[in-house]
Amino acid sequence: MVSKKELNFNREMVKALRPLLRRVQLNFFLVRLPFILAAGLFAAAEVLFISRLFPWENARWYAGIAFVVLGGLAFGMAFIKRPGVWEAARAGDDLGLKERLTTALVDQSGALWEKQREDALKSLQKIVPRRDLPLQFPVKSWGPALVALVALLLTIILPNPMDELLDRQKRAREEIEEEKKRITHLVEEIRRREPVLTETEKEILAALEQLEERLKRAGEAEESIKALSRTEEELNVLLRKEEEKERSLAEVAEILSRSDLTSSLAEAIREGDGETIRKALEKLAQELKGLASEEMASLADILEEAAGRARADLGRNALAGAAKSLSAGTLTEAVKQLLQAGEQWARFREGNTPQTLAKAISTVQEARRQIAQASSILTVAMSGSSGSPQAAPGAGGNGGESGQGISGNSASSAAGPGAVSESGGAQSGQGNGHGTAGGQGREDSQGGGSAGGAGLGSGNGNAGSNHPLGPGQPGTTPELPTPNLTGNYEMIYDPITRLEVDGHPSVVPAQAGEGASGYRETLNGITVPGLIRPYNEVLTEYREQARRHLDRSYIPPAMEDIVRDYFSSLEP
Image (cartoon, rainbow, N blue to C red; front, side):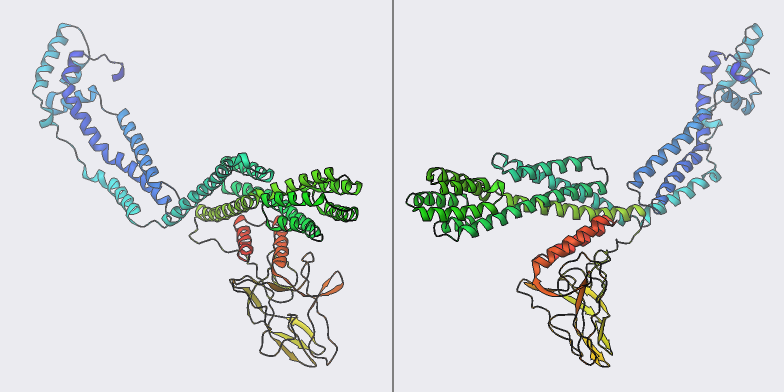
């Protein structure tokens, strides 16, 4: 049997069958239209349904793509299988032409075939496609399409529980980009002052420029946090160097203040700017001209001692040279060396290094904090959870002698100085007065401190408060230092002097019948009492200990940020 694809159709018949062919094809696509739409609608509805289970940005846009792609594939398959001229001829024959059209369509030669073709063409002229082939709308075929349409409308109309997470996710990403821009703006601000930058400011600029490049290359929020933390550490190293310079210069000023000749210079170093220091040096140079040998020797001793306290980059060699020149009686050379040292001091005072460094550190810290917070939001959003990130264990922990602190293993009290809000902080003493602390301490807005409550006694002795101001009394809480007007403490109780020891509780027994037992800590077997110490000093030590624990332990970035924020809130 010969296939229809192998037949040669007569061109005249093909041309005559075109109106009928268009009508046949139109009905073919009308029949398949519900299935084409159903394929696209089901695909779009499936995308929107998945977006209700997991956060999916631009889900409606992807649903539109799915509709076009699946619907297009269904249409493409229908287009490939569309009826041709042979099917149009058969449709005409079904209208009563008794195979005249299909027979005439085959291109054959001969007189008989010509007459048959003429008869077929006359019969074809009697057919009106719009009248004889009405449009087909099979109602039953629209069922799947209507179901798909309803499903799609429901996924569009009903609130999507993931929309809130997507909104938070979007804001978090915008926040990350905003923090990166803040770093860029800071770099540009410092660059504008580049001609007058000090050496330290140039190092700050270099560190921030490297950070800017790292942030541009960072793909994930965690990479940005690591880059910010690295730069923050570099800036802290510079800060410590500046603090060392300041302390060194203060020590030099203190030594110079012992001599009447250099007391004005010492005052200028402490409180003046570069120009004040230069004027004080010029005045000193004039006064040196009339010095007696004994006075020169005394001044040489002062300068030599000051040289021992000065840094190499803040006049150490110049001061030593001036002292040596004075001892040798070379006044001119001594003045020259003093002026050289003074110029180094003046340049140190003239720069904006403290302000630049403080702004750089605060900007980097804030950027890291915001990005860490945004990262935690992104993590929650990507996991599909509607909850918010849980707070990390706070700086305040379980109150008592072996409280749980920042690192989970603090020494003998909740880590961090500050006011204490406590619950159930009662102590009990038994027999010989052994004091054991119980209760739950929590931090308030001023920060967490060591949790110690009222002392309750039974037996031969009462357990004393763990506060050094005195033993606890039944129903009372020992008073803590009164905060100043800014809400911070000038002095604070520190239960131990260092935090290098893991927080194992120690109990110091009192003699039987003597009443209250004192609170002490044991460091390597040596009993050391708690101390009342400057607030800033204690805060610095606790912060450093927390930082070391953070470095040694794996803690999520968002949790690290909470710990750092806690210590920032304790700043006076």
